[in-house]
Image (tube, rainbow, N blue to C red):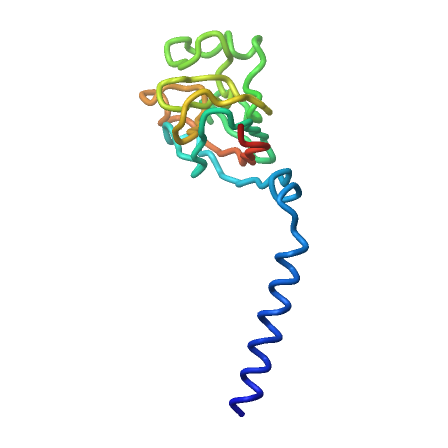
Length: 158
């Protein structure tokens, strides 16, 4: 019995090292691994679980879901946000990024806030956790509804 277990262990170990040997460093660094996360419209800044470092090239894509800044008055939209036509009908005192429409997906690394929208690719200049949210201030979230699903990938590391 002991020799059968030893043989099985050695066979498993050998098979594992063959798999490891097949993966070259170049193919491992070129691989695009993504993390999917739901971003809720009723919550402020939400961590994606992705820690970035200077030089990282990060890609964020909206992959599903919809949300609204007022479920009683306005339609559900994607991470792209509302059109400027609809945006003009919404009270203008709650935007985080005033030069972008309500409902737009926005991001933050430390104190740097930026538009993501439907998709964004950007080079990181400082280390920190990537956070995401809807372009709607904390004091105005209570009438929001819905969530969007995003995929966050680090394409390469500087």
